[in-house]
Length: 279
Image 1 (tube, rainbow, N blue to C red):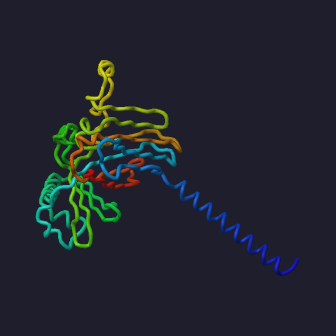
Image 2: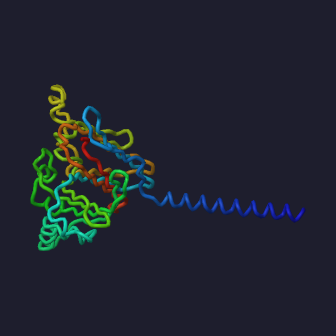
Image 3: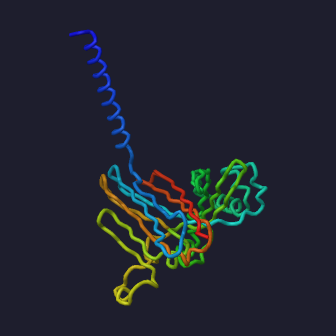
């Protein structure tokens, strides 16, 4: 056998071995993932005369005792005293805002802490840092779910988020822990499914008389405070959460949707979706 042929065979064997190791590494990485988000779709703008549909599809990559999806819906609010946040970012900038710092101090006095996180969000075509402070668990102890969740449009702000650029806060958002503001007014229909097991909830005003008589579930019967739990998932089980908005009840704000995904109580993903109302 010639020297050239031996070298060629040697190079080929090395390449095959390296390829096998790489594939095994990739397979191992995939196997180590607890869940995979295969769809996160939402409208770029809330528009009239169309279905404004939000869809989240998650696949379990390992057996799970439970999988939680937590939704928050925030709207842009006016930023008072923007100079207070100039040159600051993250928690430091948030604590310079009166409503946020007051709630943080109230939580501390009760021996509690809000849920805080840093994430990223695409605003139009630019990526920005964002910081989220969630007081829902703190305030939920003293409020009914329909009030804290803003089910009918009269809730209070329990979640705050700020979007930053190099100069400080660009946009400030405040809202509630739920799928959308005034869920029984703004959401026309929602479906939750685990594989082929599907449950549908409709806006009360859209139910037919026969559906009302049969006690068909409405958006008020959907999981409380935007939190959905799926239990005893097997590998490759697929969960879906889909809902559509009636644009007439959505207002004229810019919105920020925060979605947190937990597998067996461990935070796996946090997503921030930005979408304005079309002008």
